[in-house]
Length: 254
Image 1 (spheres, one colour):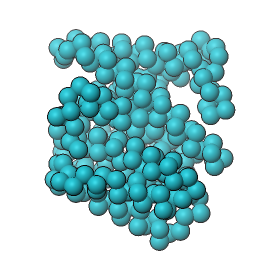
Image 2 (cartoon, one colour):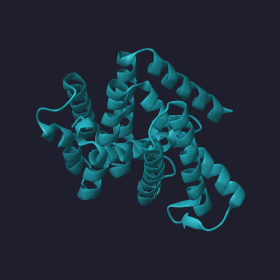
Image 3 (tube, helix red, strand yellow):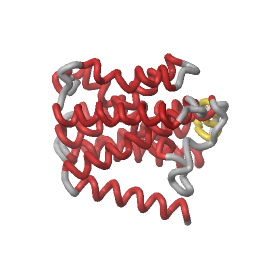
């Protein structure tokens, strides 16, 4: 019951922020950005001090606000500022810290751009694609079973669930393409988002295994942390952004 109530509350807040306009939506994503970077710092360096953690979160807030204000960076190095700071704040593995921070920041910027530059329909497509992949992977994996993908990192994920997620994401992409009279390219993008969301899930599971933690935090009652719930969305957003670099680089905001 606690898990269900938490999910309903979180989903209600997300839907309200989506339909109350760009300003409220931006505040919601900014709030998520601070929480996600907070949990990431704790995962990468469980002994991080409050002062260093505060500096990291201020840098994240500053970069995202500048991005919102300008729409695109005049100086692209600002994009790397929070990731570079992670090298020093979470120095146990500098390359891992930098890559994690960069991927997280790119995904957050993508969610800003989806709503503000691509529109609500595109944002809903990506979010739904990730949700369909997750649900299909869970139920197909439970029903079909079969060999595990990576038992050490995620002991419950099977190859049947992985392929089931791809299939139903393509099914959803087909429905989206027909209903909105979009091009066939939507199918390829749906598959890319599906696969990258699963990679994001595995990546976060690996980070938790690395420090022997079950959840990224206990901020969401019954669910663990925000990273545990948004890892697929982070991966899906990064996959969408990367695909734009090959499809139409002019659509990339930075």
